[in-house]
Length: 325
View (cartoon, rainbow, N blue to C red):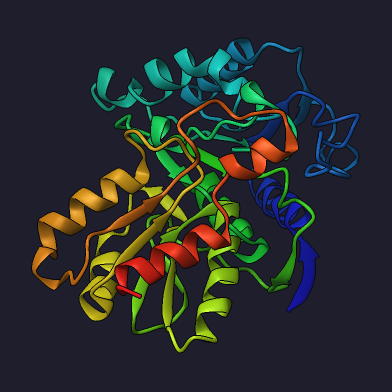
């Protein structure tokens, strides 16, 4: 094992796959000459050249469409968005072409493409640069949605995403690129659609994904001092979702708290809540609690933002509530 940063795990995954398959290329704003806005493609232009690491104009709709077209013609593009907030400019291509082309063509075209970049908030970036769209993309049949929370998972999942014959939305975080973790030096992949139990427990299940799961770890440490044992499940993949892992845990702990960095209406936590109440209702000893951002655009003020974003204190309160403490 070697300890590396999240951004290095992303770079390694892309580079290793590109060395094996010359149909894979990276395209996006500042990915080449600048080594990526967050340095996730550092050194790749030098190794692979400008035909496979391609700087684009500020035109998400344009280069998303180019990527989809090239995927239809036998390539395996990796499209980087500087942030998924900007992906809204290209969402017509993602939803109406990438996600639907296989069905609309009667199976004549696969679209092996990865759209990747940071999602959610990143500090004091205000309303239009702090949005989480995981549930938006997961709502569309034909797309796979992956949201890793650490370098190990990021590398293994990105390699699987690049090899996948369907379009994959791969969502990272500006605030995780510097996170460090142990990553094997030998080849490995992590299958899409498999959740991971990051911490075993007996009293309550906490389900989360992406960078916000760190707040669950902090809360679990605090609750352990009170004798409360938390089981933490990292979804890793939002679609397809590993419902079985969630249900198995809930049947053991009988309580569920869901932590998600997203607006409260119609999100991933809502889907999990429905599935659990349908398939494990008799196992629940308390109502399910979901923790989300406030139901407003992200504020710019640091003090307001602190109250807008979920934190470990919210998790502690929710766990105590489902335990009637």
